Length: 84
Image 1 (cartoon, helix red, strand yellow):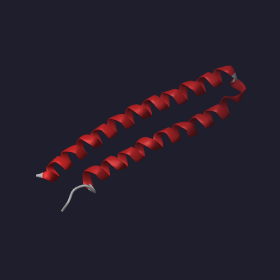
Image 2 (image 1 turned 120 degrees about the vertical axis):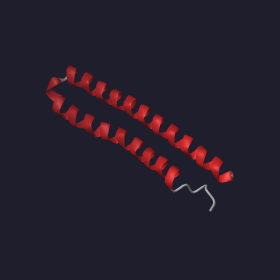
Image 3 (image 1 turned 90 degrees about the vertical axis):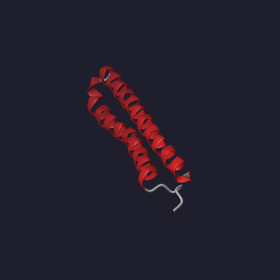
Image 4 (image 1 turned 60 degrees about the vertical axis):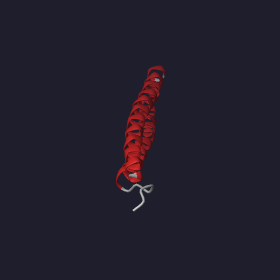
């Protein structure tokens, strides 16, 4: 019975992690892209460098939701809080 509550809490926690990570990634990606486009509009001769930096920044922002998804999967399938 006590494991049931832990499993339910883990599923709810994993869902919250997934939603939060996806919303934060979307916001972060849009912020990086908009700032890069502003820089490209101000200095068109440096647009190639800004584009490369934008791709690196978006890649770094996207790594956080991937790590959060792994944590959510561990909470569901290999839950360390469930006693056998």
